[in-house]
Amino acid sequence: MISKGINIPFFLYIVYNSFVNKKEVFFYGKKTVEIPIATEFITLGQLLKIADLIGSGGEAKTYLAAHEIVVDGESDNRRGRKLRNQSVVEIEGNTYRIVNK
View 1 (cartoon, helix red, strand yellow):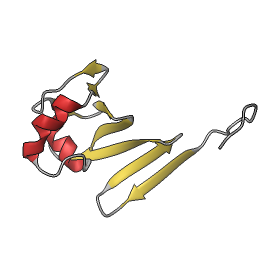
View 2 (cartoon, rainbow, N blue to C red):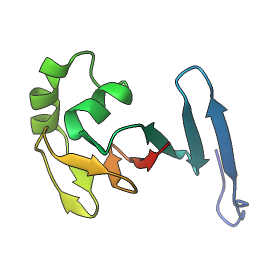
View 3 (cartoon, rainbow, N blue to C red):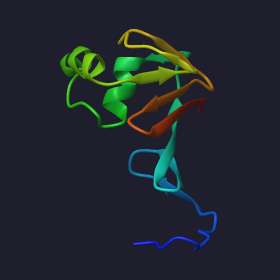
View 4 (cartoon, rainbow, N blue to C red):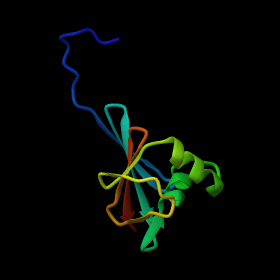
């Protein structure tokens, strides 16, 4: 527990997880994950699977209906939404950035 009056220093942790080939940046308990893609785009449903937020593609529609998803600053719940290089997706307080390999 942190009492009032104590300044919390700025912390930034970068962790590279070679098992899933993702770079994770932790900032004050929230994380930004860079998702490398080899194709021109991936869909929002594919991102949910890559981020381990759903177990199968069939769960995407239900997940998107139950959660607020922000893609490049706009609320969006279309599982077919195309995410291209440098797209930023915010899901449950975490940020996912799409990057080309």
